[in-house]
Structures are given as C-alpha cells and as structure tokens.
Image 1 (cartoon, rainbow, N blue to C red):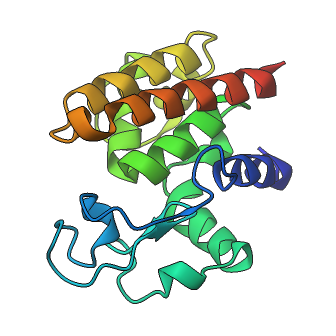
Image 2 (tube, helix red, strand yellow; image 1 turned 90 degrees about the vertical axis):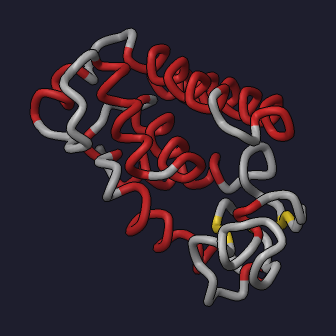
Length: 174
C-alpha cells in the first residue's frame, strides 16, 4: 500500500469521530501513566496516544505533527498495515491503536481462518485478500471488546467505533 493509504487512515483515526479529542476520564486505565486507574499520574489520552503507553509524553499538548510518526512506527508498521488491501489496512490500523498490535494480529489471523501465531506472513496476507476479511475482522474486534472487563462502561462506544471504522474502510474498498 502506498503512503497515501497511511495518510488517509491517519486522518480518519485522528479525527474527532474516532480519536481526536483529549480525554481525561479517571476511570480509563489508559489515561494513567501506570495503566491502572487511580495509580500514577493522570495525563490522559489524545489522538489515541495514551499516558499508559507513553508516560513521558506531554499528552495534553500533543500535535498531529508529533502523532503521525508515533502512529506509523508503533502501530502501522508493526501491524503490517502497509501490506494489507485498502479497507482491511484501516480496520487493522484502528485495531492496533485501540486494542494493541498483538491483539490486532491475533484478530486478523482469526478473521482469515489461518493459524494464529501473531506473525503476519505470506499465508495471512494471502488469506486477508478475501472479500469477507474486513467484515470478519470487525466481528473479531467486537467479540474481543465484549469480553473486556470494561465493556459495561465503554462497550457502546467501542462497538460504535468499530462500525464507524468499518464504514470508512468499506469506502476505501470501492
């Protein structure tokens, strides 16, 4: 995939529809430098960049210019998004950002019905070309969210997020 695919996906993910604003919800473990609600320093989350993952960043004052390289180096590249087809790359990218790179790889492999080894190799990439992969990956994401201990608090937002990303990703496939 081209660099323009990353740029389109980044613009969507950092929009106010998905990850745009600053959040300082004290119940969200990602907003705390320790990754545990109420423990450590409460720095919040902005553009999907959380205090739990980036405890040394000034989260509140992050700019899009600083976020782009973080997204590319920490999510897009490790989740192999650039090797995926348009649409599937967007869903995978959002999964890596919101659910973690390791979880995203597992969910993609489950969606592709291949052996789950957390390595996005030739077999996974070939299987990911199927027209049903995008839909199946969205379902895998929803199932993972449904099993989260925080689903009762954040579940509606998470499910809405997946559907918004799915609609965006479908548009990229056209």
